Length: 346
Ligand code: ASP
Image 1 (cartoon, rainbow, N blue to C red):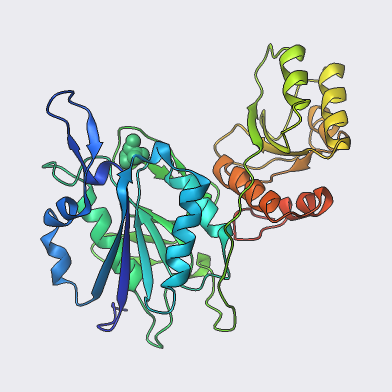
Image 2: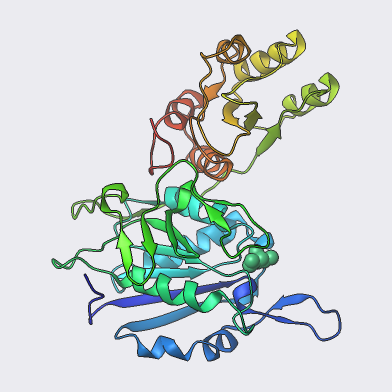
């Protein structure tokens, strides 16, 4: 397999460390423009590809990422979908897993590669990981099978030799080059001397499916993590908040919570009032199995639904997406339990 000479790639620069430079007064890293970034990667010209670019102005630190920027990315990809064979999004690492997850839901029916990447060191730094990440991401976005179909027709994160399904990723390190993990789903490819694709795990290409863009996300939700010693007054107050529509409930182990009557009552009452509560484990690998222990079973009875082996990032953005579509609480509960973009193993 090789990249086709006719392939064209749209490189979308949102910001992040990859394009930052150090402010000489404060010493802090600040976003810098796209030309600065490209000047440090003259190797891009050696690709036998048509590479075009689009840059956020100003570029952002990904801690400032928001659903409106996700909608902007959806719009850019949708309006350029026919023109390009693949898309590379340069993005800060801090919220890259959230953006990758959000795009996997918002770009329904995507059949082209959308590869997010970034770096831990700026592209101008001597030991930067940005060059390798960027060049390989472009190669993957352009990769085609001998019949001309894309090798990876889905939203992915490429980072430090690993190609991962985007909605399965989590940032695991603030200092290592190997900063992302796909704990509950195998790698889609590994890049060494060659890029080895693990085709069995990649979403199959289907020429009959059309891209349907979605722009609305409803973020009236909360991530709520359990801990021993949790206090009733605070939890009850949060659950009664009128704006709150859903909760990603981070529980212990295989989906367990303390058996305090006040907690079960507050959760039951909240689900009866239409709040959607999704059970996600605090463990980084494995799945919620609420029938396993009595401490999990009580949550099932309270109307809480299983988020299976979802990452927090995928559960949060999936709930925002489903709420944004205006579905009823029952439909959202049903869809949270199904895989709609390969985000959970069911
Ligand atoms: N704060 C930066 C960002 O997420 C970190 C990075 O890019 O690695 O934009």
